[in-house]
Length: 301
Image 1 (cartoon, rainbow, N blue to C red):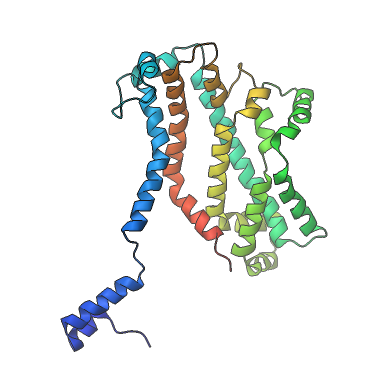
Image 2: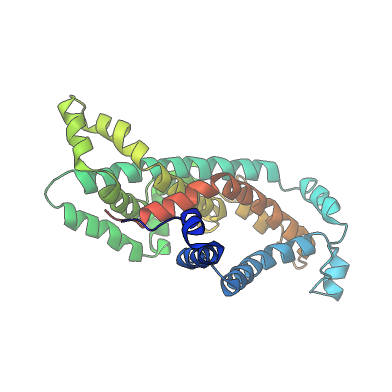
């Protein structure tokens, strides 16, 4: 039997009982209090403060930063001048930004596709050694990336890809975390009944994957693609080795801004600000999909 509504209580027992029922309903809704909002505001402040500090340094001059490393909380007026200095420098920042965009987008799409393909096989197909192979894939997460740099560079040199963007894209087209994440998500989100129905209709395994599995993992794919894009966009170690200064990505180009004995802090911070803005735009565009992917990936059943 359902509880009577507040208007019904007002009609039968009067406004006092209705007000008490409304308070009980609000309390049952577990509405957050001022402590929760204070903690959220503190977390947001801690997260935004480094970005704002970068903006303050980027809008200052070198002499101002030398005199006062902690600038005034009010931004200066040198941001446009610093932007002009960067784009007029010897570093082709637009080419570096395009390289980063191409590498990040290609890597994100490839990781989502191949990780979902492998996750579908591990989650919904039955074959010998499935559990052991999945455990081996997950175990590779414990292997540091630096251990494979030398043989990977030799392979890329033999393929003639040193200095080419494909040398950065190909090693990252699938990740162990992506396979594990998609396996867990497909196990919970894709029922066997849909796969059996597709087989009865005559669909092949790949058609089942393309028409049923891929649409089912859209929230998880958005989250995986977003984090893969960010990881590829901010990756410095491998691109600096295999690409060099002739065909750099954006992090490598920003490193070139601080060569020499004198470090122009405002110029470097302006470059950092340029590299952060596309990520912020991406977060605003895919924020809802990110939250949906995290929440749905945590639900089992």
